[in-house]
Image: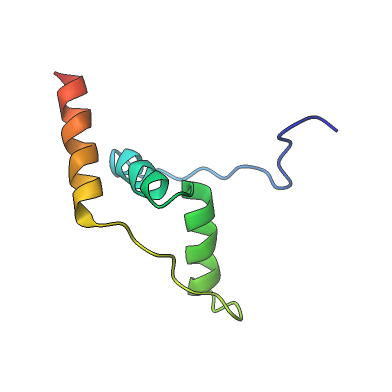
Length: 73
């Protein structure tokens, strides 16, 4: 078996620049975007035992946006 072979095919979603803020927020919480999305989907469709994931402080997103803006200049 090859390394990092996903069990499911990737899905495509258009989000915009907030995708990068989401990445910074997920990393700040010690996880990744895909895991947060899976948790949200499980909660949304009321899977037994599913809970909303913890959210980072707002300053994480604001700092990520500032850093992205500085890089764009």
